[in-house]
Amino acid sequence: MRDHRYELAVRAAREYPKSAAAEGTPLLIAPLWLPSEPIPLHHIKLQYKQADQFGGITGTEPLAQRLLPLRTDGTTYSTYSEAVAALAPPAIFENRSTYRLLYANLRSDPRMVFSGGQYFDGINVGDAVAHEFTAATLNEIAAQDLRAAIGDPCDPARRLVNVAISTLTLRYDQTADTATFPLHRRDSARVGHAGGMYQVLPVGVFQPAGEESWNIENDFSLWRCVIRELAEELRGDAEDYDTHGGPIDYDAWPFAHQLNRGLDTTQVRAFCLGMGVDPLTFATDILAVLTIDAPLYDELFAQLAQTNAEGSITPTVPFTAETVERYTSTESMQAAGAGLLRLAWRHRLTLLA
Image 1 (cartoon, helix red, strand yellow):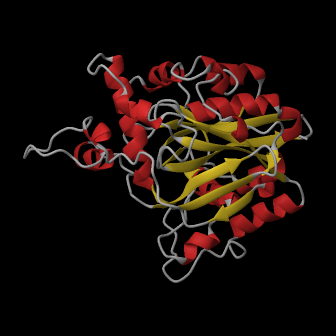
Image 2 (cartoon, rainbow, N blue to C red; image 1 turned 90 degrees about the vertical axis):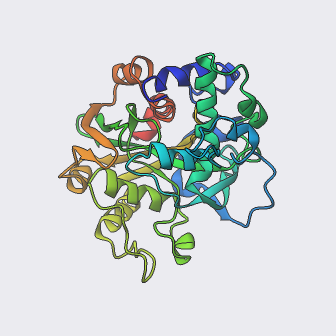
Image 3 (cartoon, helix red, strand yellow; image 1 turned 45 degrees about the vertical axis):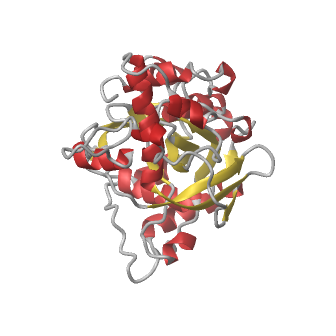
């Protein structure tokens, strides 16, 4: 899975109708998740509610446990995340609180509904089903019973769904009418998902900044999640926020204040292009684009990090047809990044307006 991640994702996409693929990439998108035009990020209505009793696959069923190795005492690990933590933990592997997706409609009256979840919810199902697919590809097992039991991976009623926000960050030079973007190469030793692959950045799980209850409401914002990930992945700021005494004050945070002011003056434009599912691991990503005018971009990211906690960064990749084609067709790129780049190129006139 680590060494052939891209090839496996391309193969896994063939298990689903071609109509589900985003712009010819492996990324799967449900019809309600693909708007006809970019949506300003702040136009998406968010609702947080208590979830009803869940009747789908959680990763604790015998279908999933049959894929797990035995402990030295002969007993089976209870979940995929427990096995990973014991046998092959990446540097970053914490079961933090998340916002769990219940419903999304990004076509008419854009809205998303969430409840509370845990990071390992996605690992226990998604990584297990990827393991199953790999074993079947190697003819080690005959049937993909877990994948079949889940059915439609874009249906949050069939599995517990965490989402990440994958953001293409464009530096737009209005004078030259050109744009560039930073590109991430994820390090297999540091991350539990999509190691060794290219990806846009920043990318981060949609979750509160801390485990205290007051963070749930304060951080329930797609935009605030993007702000934190920009600080962490492009500036190299620490990911540990001191929320023990209270939630983050975004108004008093100079970096967040600059970005908010940029939105008000249109030096910053934030859009959503849809949401999709990785066909191998079922990782689910909101596809966002952040366009920042060059003077403000250079001020915000004067010291752009060359590496971060999850891999290395190429700071200035041209946003051109040739580059988009290269990374979405010939390079090992994560499905969400490939789908996002293709969609962004299709909508480039709106994104750079």
